[in-house]
Amino acid sequence: MSNILRQHNLITHSPDETIVLGAKLAKELKPGSIICLFGDLGAGKTTLVKGFAKGLRLKADDVHSPTFTLLNIYEGKGRRTLYHFDLYRLAESSEIELLGYEEFLYGQGLSVIEWPERLGQLMPKEYIRIELSHRAEFERGISIKEVK
Ligand SMILES: Nc1ncnc2c1ncn2[C@@H]1O[C@H](COP(=O)(O)OP(=O)(O)OP(=O)(O)O)[C@@H](O)[C@H]1O
Ligand SMILES: [Mg+2]
Image (tube, protein in one colour):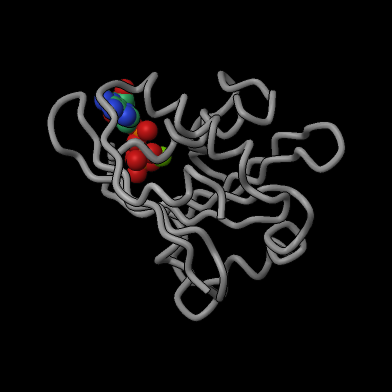
């Protein structure tokens, strides 16, 4: 495992610091990795995804939480495509099967999932688990763990 993945518990003190962390992570993760982001509303999940986009040299400004879609795809060169799932509005896990989501989730690009708990039984078996917590106005706790 790479260095950053070994640092289990981190604290960031600004959105920019969270973006820098996401960029570092994206560079160290193998293509095809799945990252599940746990944390309440406003914990900083989408902010971290902006960092992933930056690390893959995609446009971080394009990253936002889709209001009506469950998946945004940010196309990158070669294997550097980012699949950004936001399952907040998923009513039941079977709904995502209509997306053909497995093709993306288990494909070559980096997949990141906000609100992965909505997947229920469809949760991947292997993933990088990142938990974000709101500690103070600009302070977020970020813990990283590899689940196998
Ligand atoms: N250290 C920090 N890291 C990340 N975001 C921070 C930090 N400090 C303050 N913020 C602010 O917290 C908010 C995080 O919003 P963001 O959309 O990333 O949360 P989210 O977890 O994706 O929420 P949702 O579940 O609604 O999608 C932003 O307004 C951001 O500016
Ligand atoms: Mg979000």
